[in-house]
Image (cartoon, rainbow, N blue to C red):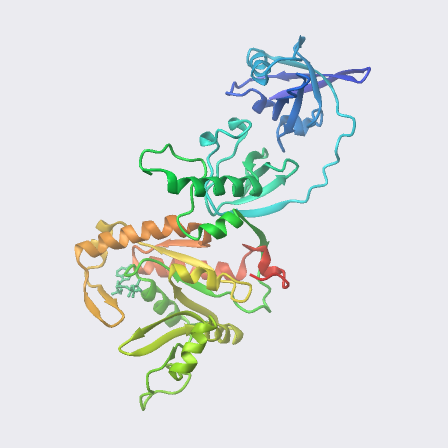
Length: 440
Ligand SMILES: Nc1ncnc2c1ncn2[C@@H]1O[C@H](COP(=O)(O)OP(=O)(O)OP(=O)(O)O)[C@@H](O)[C@H]1O
């Protein structure tokens, strides 16, 4: 708890008294005050470097970035190192008195809030460059952050959403992250071994490194689909064998008037009982290859000399009909469905432990492109678990929801609830989806 008082203004000097009750000592006491300080190397003067948004100093409205610190508890601070000032504060009990010269033009805070999704992990405790690690905020890939202050080009202030704490923390700006990631990326090929390095505060992206370099934070907005809008595409992703197809089949079977899969294209000849556009869109190889060339497929492959694929147009025609299109995707399909056009809600189907799968998959069969159809072996469960962990660690920042496919019944209930939320409730979506002029 803190009480404060403005003691006086004299010849441009202001004296503030801060009384701390139930004082909690932390490594850098200025974190309690909610401000960081810096020293002008030419003059030796100490300045308030930044005021942490929502912190004590900010809420009091008494300290501003740029104010010159003259005395702390009666001790002149000019010429001191910032650490020495912090030392004085650390030994203060009950009352802290600041004497300072306020900066001449105190800024009016006119910043608009920005929301971003982090595309990488960050740990201020492992970042030697951060001005004050205690004031830093750790985050993980996929976290949505509210950027409350971008005054400093290198260090932003942010809160993690949903925001429970009123106080913001320091995070590296997009520009600083781009710089750091570039340095890290360039330095890696010249290092002999990766195993004995101390862990970096910026975890290097394992894939699509270039796009993460360009955009370490993706701007997002909270958006609720209008009832008249097309439904959102639902994309299920998971390691082969986890049960993605089973869940998709069951969802569609539960309510075929609401859910539908896209009709695939194939170059194989039509059988007499098949109808064009019902089982498949039957097309010639030349047209199929042309569609591949023009990136019109979410995915495609060859089986016994014939091409098969799921086209973007087939997905769009389900959505245009007002039904919720449900597809399964591989990791490379993420960028195809995460667009202004398809606006996919991505659900990761995560395997339970190999031991749990061994118990629950006793009657299950592993199938792969018509070549394999056999009961699961113990090593299959191990592989599914490992592949699931790999997928999650590499792509978790793109997942809107995660379901652990343990019991099938329970997973179906969870899936249905998630799909309903995706259509009816506000979700964080890339801001570019709502700006028609942006290329997504
Ligand atoms: N939760 C579950 N409990 C028991 N069996 C399950 C569960 N989920 C899926 N299965 C069974 O596991 C087998 C594999 O599932 P499915 O074919 O859906 O895998 P998949 O993830 O689509 O893999 P692939 O992409 O290789 O086809 C099927 O026999 C399915 O019925």
